[in-house]
Length: 434
Ligand code: CMC
Image 1 (tube, rainbow, N blue to C red):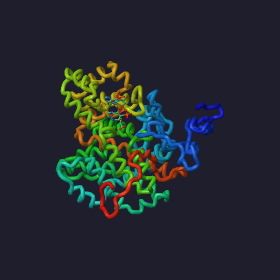
Image 2 (cartoon, protein in one colour):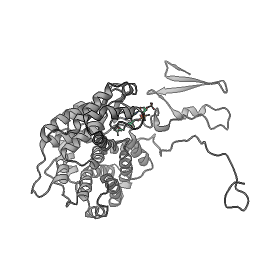
Image 3 (spheres, rainbow, N blue to C red):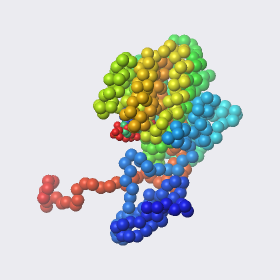
Image 4 (cartoon, helix red, strand yellow):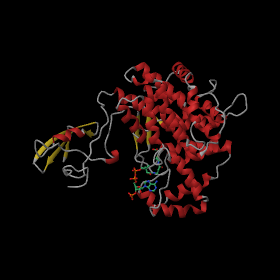
């Protein structure tokens, strides 16, 4: 197998002695070009086998760029560090969806559009009421996102630009409302309605925590910190849930159904559910003294260090660096979360340990975010919900890019069949081997 300077890969098949030129474009060959590599005319042709998409690009995308070796993350070309420093979450959502940051007038119009759609139909409260008192808010969120599909049947018209935009606005606007209602149901608190005077994130805090006061005033440092956390979670190219969003979207399901499926994927402990697991882990460790013993168990393969490791980042997760800084600002307001000491010690021990160095395991976005959420007053079960609120603009941008990409068809991988060969039932029998 050789690659020439003209941008093609020369492959010789020793089974037949035939040589093929496979064009290389944008650093990839087309998997379907392998199909010409056959041993006979009725041979299906060569496939590539890639469980978990370890080395397969499923799309061309202009949204998010990651260099995992260098720890680079950019949305539409802008470094995540600059966006976290200077932009709001809604501006970043606009950027992801439209390709450019909004100017002042566009930002105001966009914020107003979103603010106008924060209310949910009163029936939503009725079916949230039907959930058990200890229902996990992520289960409620997944269900209520899917239910939005029944309120907005026109969302099925996915080729209509105006209608697509309408659903995008609705979903971004209603996510905090659904999330806060899920929380208040669990607490047995009355639902707090959106307050249009507040920012996107300030209003979410209002719907979460408003009690008897006439007007809720979010604490500015916490409001900004949560806004930045949403920015850090807003997109991450072809991660598990974005891949689900695109796959379900490729069947032309409406965006609510696709986002419900994406949220279900995010709930998994290897994905967005990891922040919840980190808190459980830190509580289980319990004290700084017990860190070495826990790390030893991880090295023996008894368990995984949650909030560590990433499929793409192999040196550091740039989001984790920003989060550490936010943690300091938040703890100045809330007081220090005692779990931070355990987390810092865990990081120190792990980063100096040969196992973690060899496996290139570093703290990821979920390692410190949970400690901050807890200090802000969010219960652990809400952590993946917070991740989901942040990730919605990314899901929608990925979904829309897929819908508008003329090369995309229904997502349908191949398989390597390894089951039984042809066999037959005996005549007249209802089953069993012949
Ligand atoms: N603790 C201990 N060992 C680990 C860990 C960990 N957290 N992560 C990976 N490894 C080891 C794993 O045992 C394997 O070792 P070996 O080669 O000796 O068998 C090696 O590292 C490669 O692991 P992998 O599972 O093949 O790697 P992956 O790219 O498929 O998995 C991951 C990536 C994020 C699922 C994994 O690192 C993990 O399970 N981390 C803990 C869960 C977590 O924090 N998830 C949040 C990810 S960031 C936010 C998001 O994307 O949602």
